[in-house]
Length: 106
Image (cartoon, rainbow, N blue to C red):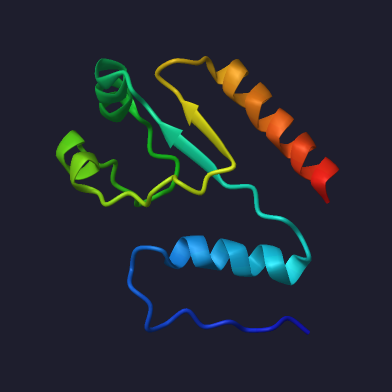
């Protein structure tokens, strides 16, 4: 039977990170943390402006909403990807390599 874990009482920022780690621990798996950033401001603006909503009822945030969002630090990321500098294919390859490396460590 699954164990129920409550994350109430924690600050809003960080709950998802903790929940992912709890899920990985419960599954007996290692959590691979990725950090995504985009150093190309123009490309980032275009992506925000042209993004598609894939969940019914969800509203796409505008640029100001995205800029005002509090992002968690990526200091503990296992792999960091700058989507302003690398292609989708290169990012996928780097993630695959990081997953393979994590498997070797286990």
